[in-house]
Structure formats: structure tokens, C-alpha cells
Image 1 (cartoon, rainbow, N blue to C red):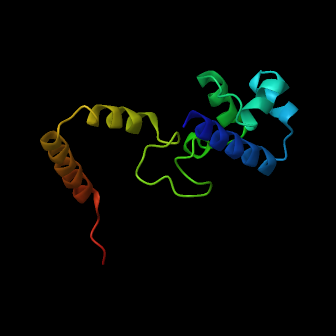
Image 2: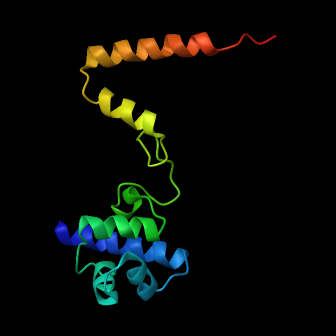
Length: 123
């Protein structure tokens, strides 16, 4: 399973790199790792450390879910939180994850009432 995961990560990284017209050496330099190490990652021989993986996402301008094989390139992220959410939305999401089902339902009710109060009647 680990090998399959490494192969998928490597293939997705290679695809993202080629789409951006970068060489392995350019990506490695921008991440701050040796070109040989990056080459092993792309070949599925080595799994990156978390800091290296985050650097790859940044340099390759790739969604981590795409590189990890959880989402295909160009697909919609759906209801999951994205890195583009503003801080206040991320804080609310973190808090909501700690609520039980009844509390989440109550929070949804409050949010619906708040949104309904903002709507202007159309004429």
C-alpha cells in the first residue's frame, strides 16, 4: 500500500511539474532539497517529509488533495475546506467540528435565520 501511495504521489507531482514547465532541478531548488531526492519522490522511491510535501504543493501550485490522490486535477473541491477560506471561516469550521449532531443542527438553524434576514425582497 505504501508503494502504491508513493507511486501515485510521484506521478501526480511529475504531472503538476510538467504542466508548469519546470525541471526537477528547479522544483528541488525552490523547495530546498537535493535534485536527487526530488527525483526519487517523483519515481515513487521515496515519500517526502511533511515540510517537503508542503513545499512541493507551494512550488507546484498543486492542491495537496490532488498530489495525495484524493482528488483529480481540475475537479471541484466540494464542501471541504480549502486553503482559500478566510481565517474567520476556518475558525468557525474548527469550532463546528467539536459540536455534536444536535449542536450542529442548532448552529445551522441560526445561520439560516441570519441569512434569511439579509435577503432583500425582489421587486
